[in-house]
Image (tube, rainbow, N blue to C red; front, side):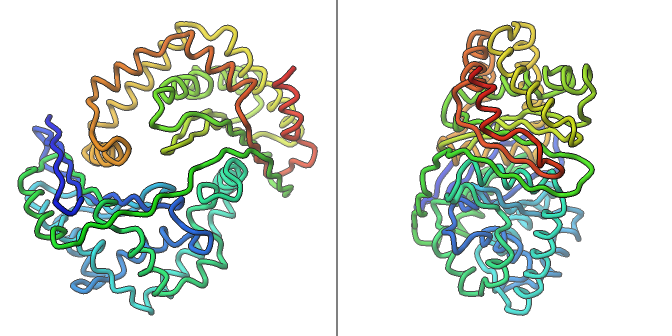
Length: 420
């Protein structure tokens, strides 16, 4: 499998990887325009725009967009994150040009029909309502807000209902003008693809655009803080975030190995101690996520009201213990899990196309898998223990609690336990 990367004169980038033996391909356009690129009055517009891409272009109606891909047995979708909006499709190899045409059409030529805006506005408001009714969804929005208070990175991707209710056609067009420049777009494809053909299609579709750089987002600052909402629910939801490295920092590999060993699977410390040994919860996990300039290690659990204090205490104690006695066997297991998860995922052309796009956005190039595996293998037990010490004692923290949590420990209580 060979990665090829090119760039048009206007800055539009193309990256692809041919995967021998496949009869299908994944292809998409990744735009560096997510939630953190919004001004406060725009919060939620990147996601709204993603929805509107499928509601009609100058050449196709909403139904024709769907039919064009589904008539050949493929599928098309999109997503918005805090740092990117992606539009992608999966089709058979003979239909790559068709998929490229449809995706390019929805990115370049949306009509933003006022009637369709109102229809989709209602859909998004329902999506917001559904998220608010899902405790283990909304608690992570609150945790993000406390981690990056009063910053674009701390705002929800869906946006508040009052802003979504007010977005106009001009607002949508304005965000495209601000953020959908050629230097913010990456065409990425993997599977049964021909790079030279992709280059030709990209030149035909995007080559006429003027070079335009995007706006640089505000640098993130992990602030920390506490959010607590008492509500009559069956479970108390507990989420703790700790400042961690961004994805341009090689320490991200240590952070990910640490969170895997701490709470990444059934053999992890938190799962074994909190669930298996004490039966305090059904779900508990730790994970590390990263952005361009910051990251968070997050621990989540759901438990009963009368057990949330014990769960929180044990969580802090397990974090501190990891700094003292994390074993080489645990680190080796976490490394193996991390590598296996990455490599198994890359057997999918969709995952591989996404990886290519994100790496080009992060580094401007695609580091080899061998380099990535080597960095994972280079993380030592001592590295993980040192990182665990930082997480247990020093790293700034944020806490979110939801449900019957009136008597749950405060962030100050947890900080006191960390310092003890």
